[in-house]
Length: 579
Image (tube, rainbow, N blue to C red; front, side, top):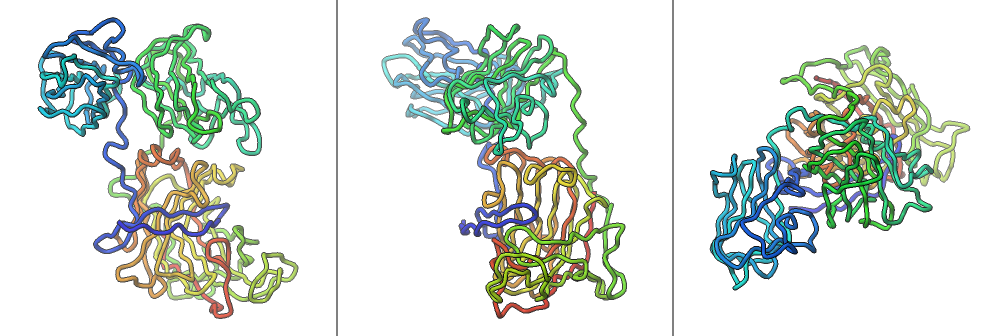
């Protein structure tokens, strides 16, 4: 695996940049974000009912092995065989088991699953157990998971600090639904300033992955910190989902209450990983609280989402999620640019986006720099052309702070947007220091006042004129943007130059992720579950509009020089959207 250096910080639209790793592929060198084994699987066992063949004493109960506390343990009597059995509450596919042994460990043992707690199937067996911390990748299914010890490694019994089972459930608990949507929230404190505007408790329960609750900066960066939701009536809880900001909890409890005064823990951990946690836990109460006692960072506590599932309560029906594209997707919008030479872009599909660029760019965008060429192409032309009365960063070629260049930027803005689909364009890019062609999308709520990056940004293609053997595809959201955007760079086979010919950029986008392709070959993939588990919320389940532009200069490409060829053209053969 080859590692690529991150590009310098850059901005486009409002702000963006990114790069991660590159993987050699049969046709492209491409970055592919691939989840680690079982990255999207959940911890299923914590807080679940557990029974043991025996216990050494009341000080070492079976429940201690599934309480998430590494300082408590189960211990058996001093004989063989012994067992510890967990009831997951429903059938699950088991992918991994983690065992944290005390000095009294098993030399020979099996891991078994069962549908009924009586008939068992072995999914792991060893006669050479070494104790310590064991992570065992397994494959099996069942409602019950059992450790059966048949030979002790010491004269003592069997003792486990933790017995963790990871996997996925075959479905939700019958009748289970989201109970917390738009319900009242209360917290130990809340933040509302330039860094986190109106980050109130309600933001954690609004199903908006780009809004969050946070404890206040002046008194809230302390322990404990907490937030709870009023479900409106007593509920039977079977799952809680936490999507953390980096300001997350290392040690916390999920608690339930009937009066918001007396609380009962139903889940405890001292090793919270942050990001997205799916907790299959059980409890009963009207109120559900996250009670944090130790933070993962010097900052406070902050949650993008705090979702409670179960039955009962007084749920508010959440919005229906958008449907995935048809299979195969159908063409719903396109522009083939077949107008006569000199024609402006179709006004029913595109609108000009004139004015100064962002990101330290040196051009002024005008409506005069975009037209069709009569040969089936849209032309965005960059020119060395002074705009009197304008102001730009200092141009190193002329030394002037008056904008020395013009170019074009157009978007579908109020004309067309889409949620999901196959979005495709065939483009030929220019070559030369300072050029920055791009094909990208912005969340449509940007047009109604939601600021970047909360609206979301999807970069399908960016190329730097000074290095046209490399292209970039990147996502931007509140939790990852600018130099920390989520994306990658890639090249053509043999180091070929993108500027030498047309190439087709395609994005396949649905509710589970995004796949980027160039000339039909996959170059970069985004798995929604992996993104949420490692970087932050997925915010791409709402409409986005299309943008084409050719920037001159800026934080990412750097400025033009005396050798940069002007005028230069970005040619677009077509843009098509399928859904």
